[in-house]
Image (cartoon, rainbow, N blue to C red):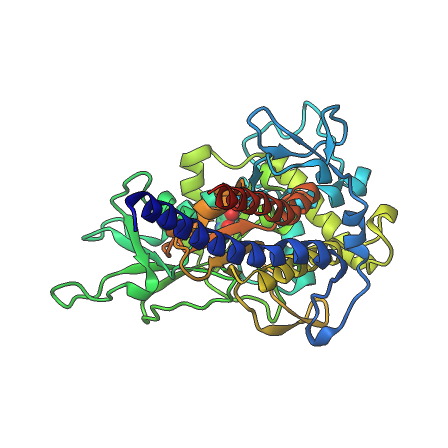
Length: 482
Ligand SMILES: Cc1ncc(COP(=O)(O)O)c(C=O)c1O
């Protein structure tokens, strides 16, 4: 065989192999596109195939079908923009940012609630630094404390009796206040702060940011060695996040030493995400309006603390850090929490447009719908997989369902090692597994964006299908040319 003939043959071989690989890929991704289109029709979040009338989610269906691309070419939503295009017009060029857990999915509900949550604060109000000098946490607004207690009692997700409430600028500030309060001031070495991987990616960053002499990030709780080289017990604080960010699992402490100190981050222990099986009853529990009602911008969180001295030290931390917490924000958060509790008290029949759906009914149904859409797509794709959650009975809603977390912990199956890069090729931004102490085969995807962005995300599958179709045509052309 001549040299030239051999060269042509090997080029053909390369092209054939390449074509076969691409056909395999397109067939798989074809399923994604197909199922992403089809899955819009099926919604069932309840166990045993029990279907529920999707009152809340229907509001999302009728939502504005507009997106526009902001200056930085990231997708954002707008009801009035003249540059608005329908979601179907997106040709795959806009960036879908699902990297952060910005809870804008709740915006629509609160818009529909209209004046019910409007708060007017006059110029003379909320002037003083102080809220309640009789309270250990002197900057805690009494109306905010009342609304916290009322909502926990109603939902049944946490014990509030004999607890001190400490308010913070988001639970982020309370996390740091808790570390400060729980560490002995003159320990021989910094206390290790651990959490089971995959853990919330901010924990290591927040813990080590100021290089404190009191504590340091100790990594994955499963790998924490309890004793030092001299067989002395190493002190530690374990953060237990349940349901967990990023993987949605229900968790307990894993180090389990009798003198271990625990902080329970219960940001997602609300009935839209997971069945409420019993009131949480731990020494130090953190909550936030960011993920309960979606008011991340209000920057309000609260801690339920058993021990008076710990609550006092947390209060001291916040006093030195920000001299208290915005009263305006606390009043607003109180109004929102009361509105949520009012909606539950009314029983929630009817649509949010009529102002009657309960907040949790609406948000639960919307999450169910989104998870059904995502699961249908992932199941058929054979490219990705998602965690499965056991069914649990929710005492609040009196129904059994599987957790439907605020984040999808997506795994790339097969040979693909870097799931974040793979999705970025399709202009979908996610957060890679290594940020959470896991492998890059995983990514975290936010399930909490506005309706338009989630719809765009589900439509991106079809665009990927078309893109790969074009690539195959090009390969065929090259083959026939040779
Ligand atoms: C587990 C967990 N804790 C705390 C926070 C932060 O909450 P906040 O907005 O109240 O600071 C988040 C935010 O994503 C979170 O996922």
